[in-house]
Length: 229
Image 1: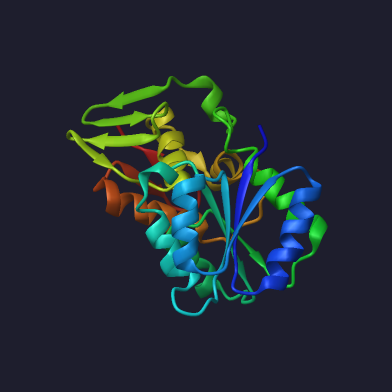
Image 2: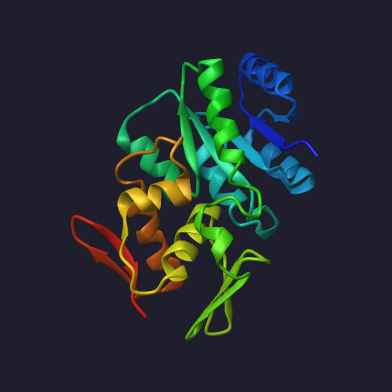
């Protein structure tokens, strides 16, 4: 089965350009011209990957991403932002909204396809190096990480996380009290072929602490993070 990719951009030439290059690689490509259409199409298609333009009239990419992340059926769907801006604030805003990565315009086809393929490798059930060695369900005191259903439950309450937030928590909790270096986290959660900003991990850790109301994730200054049991 081919991976399904939803392209979202208000510029038709961008949709045609990206769609052409993706179809050449054998992907099933779907399109949307705005945020509202993206929400409708994503709910119907349930794509593996959404490539989402940031700057769109009406409902912009940030707003669209936030709404997409509220749909639990899209928990495994990865989201990449297309942005003409390379400033840190734009990237951080994307990660805050629940994006997994970003691609900066102008887009070079070979680099674009390479990044898409690298990210989609992580959609599969055994996508990360660490995932192959853990059970489908990890229970630590009052926290349940259910990898089969891709959900987190704390004190009986189900919590919605983005794919990267889930994978990050799953990694740290897979070996309680072990300190994971920033490099280990990058390689296991984002992959060694994916380039992300220096503050990406910090943003996701902060979002995890907020959503799960968890103090077990401890910062080891200058090294990385650990899940303290």
